[in-house]
Image (cartoon, rainbow, N blue to C red; front, side, top):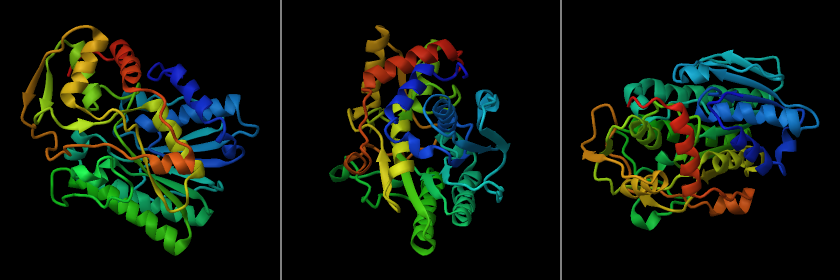
Length: 353
């Protein structure tokens, strides 16, 4: 396994899903976006399940065009029963294999990149999702679509924490619209194929997942902050710094994703995240300072042209549905997650941002 991920985290995830993972035994999984942040975890988890848990190994077909995977994602491991194919999901894909599960995780998730590639962002979530749904019809496969908490837009305070039933407060023309609307259309496609063609679909809405494996050039808040700290460069806080988020460590997120993939109620969407604590960006810096035992320099600045403004003031998931229906419960608190991530990033990042 690459040093870009922590073996201890993979082992923890495999342990956490032991009660459900045998449902993958002898099955074939198609994974899109397999060399992205989440995709690399899926590959390692499936390899570990094959080596340690499953009575009959799962076969995994991994698709990715490697455009945003970085050098770490392009370094593809060779694992038994896991096949990598360089493929852009906006093009149709066919295989002689009988597919049982489709995990559609392809997409451009970093605000910096979807600001730079708005049309490509739309194409992956719309054309790519339609292609995968048609493949699910052909194979009677179960499909899980990775959406985003961004589909809720900027919820008002009475809808925080945000339930899956919340319809959103969004702009179809704002600077984030290419991403938000692409995910909303992807969800609509899943609902149409579920209702009209009987496809067993689930939608996963992740909330601010972080952990080892995030590229230093990802530009999301934690890789950005830890890279700048490594380089002794003052942090840049966009907006006021009072906007709030919750953060979900990768081991909890991956467990939740897999529980949805295997046991989600067909046709349903699930928030996957950690609702506690909801903290401001300034409070996040204070937590980092506590862990590092030193002050961190920062400046509050306007949004640059390269980063989409109009971000939500608050973002916090209601996960009661996931708790009740798929037995999801986050285990890693933010302080422990930050300790793991900061220790890892300090050993991997070079500090150039």
